[in-house]
Length: 47
Image (cartoon, rainbow, N blue to C red; front, side, top):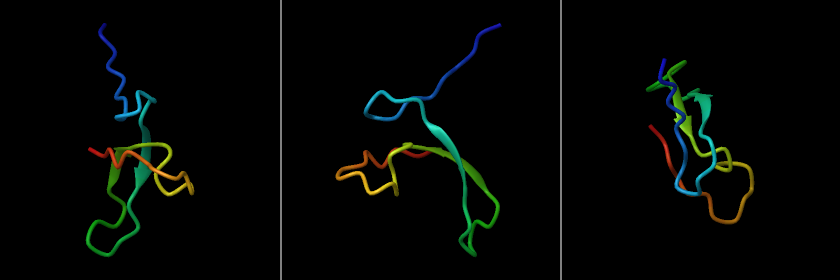
């Protein structure tokens, strides 16, 4: 069976996140693991 691993623009495996905004409450999405971590320039990848 084929397994697909999403990677961000830096080439790192994307991590799954959960939205807590009122518009998308509880919605899960993949994003750069460095986004929101204080990293100087996150790649802003999300899907």
